[in-house]
Length: 252
Length: 252
DNA sequence: GGAGCCAACTTGTTCAGACAAGTGAACCCA
DNA sequence: TGGGTTCACTTGTCTGAACAAGTTGGCTCC
Image (cartoon, rainbow over all chains, first blue to last red; front, side, top):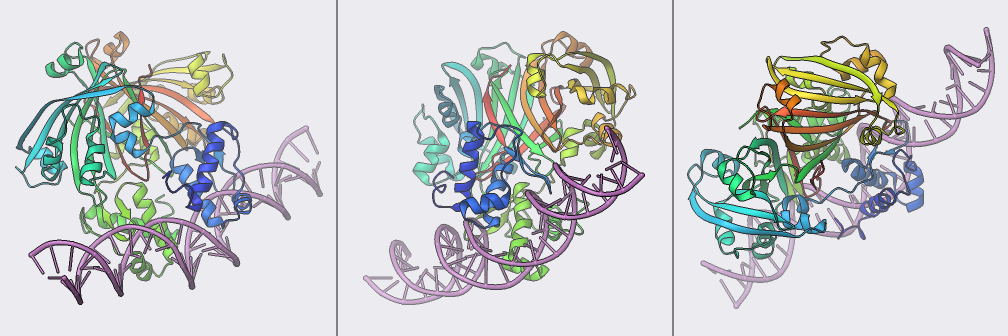
């Protein structure tokens, strides 16, 4: 996105407005200039301006109703897709030190759920990885990931203290994640969780299960990440026109 | 949305495509017809078709890359904003029985955080509500909500077993929620939580704190909802062009 | 002063056309 | 057979125009 912000007109306009909101020049509750104002100011068509404000609306920064001027809703930047999918990238963007270790990497046939999530034939051999993540030296998250067969070799070849598997996959094999789906719930720590995170068995954990897929929709990994309670919070904003979040009945 | 699906062209097209995906007629991984195909088939302009597919992309149902045909990513409906904001509406949409009781309703000055979240002057009197929610007769969620002063009277007047505060507010006072922000984390059950949910103290809870606001961005309520572990899962999908989910460092 | 109406303004929807940029498959050539 | 090139196709970006629909503030009238 930032690479195009200088050449693509609507991203340029969106970035300028975003800066005004983040800087406080357009405070929360303020009205944005009208579309025709912006169109004149940037000498762009109204369609291009609408695309710019639609971008900000999708980020949850502004809201709109037919007939009334757009208003500023929040004043917080949203993290990028890469930062959500990469623990290391996210932590470093916030100025924290991130470290991690592969505790085990073994090949085994996929379970029924893994095969389903990874869109593989039942019993296909996947790479199962157990990994401990540290934030500023503190054990923060236990990650259990199943990598699809076609990336298994690349992941096996990575060093034990590899900072970001997704970054390495992207650089080494050109495999880039474009889509993700996340399931978030809470559960008590099992004995392995407790030992690794240095907490008592049964302590609350925040679990984020997610599948990452390429631009063609091919699943890359299916992961079960368990965070120590209090270490992270997930945040999502929605509106009557865009509801990215969904609540489901228990699904263990 | 469904009210306009018959009259607004792009929603009509989006709804038809959504049905084809949900029914499996367009299976996961399949290519959508090209924009010009769809435009011809519906005798609409390409712009209108693009708005239709943008709707589905925002729902996470389809993905797209420049130059290549769009592909089907998932086959699940996304729930509406109302269903996310209203526990009762959500449960009933899934065929579950929802019940609830006000355990207490008291007026008191807002705490610093409540005043901030509700955009009120510090110390403004709010209505603090404690509520227990049952799903199919099982105690499932404890809700602690602070209602802004300007809706307090309406909420106080509601019956003790009111099914949905937001629905009643909408019908009685014309106050409708348009925007929401949600913070999701895990924490151990306190003694009050444990007693109400009939679990042991320290058991894992999934917490969803959220603020709801009107179409003009005016906050209505700030709520702390605690779900028994295993009873619900939150789900969110994202892509490199749209990232509604954000991860934050601990924030108790 | 208060209720209701109206007109200017603003966002929502739709159209038709144009060019840029990326994809994928057929094709050719070594 | 393998590798590169070309080309039709598809999505991305942008324009200018028109009308529909909802909001807001000011005005009139009582």
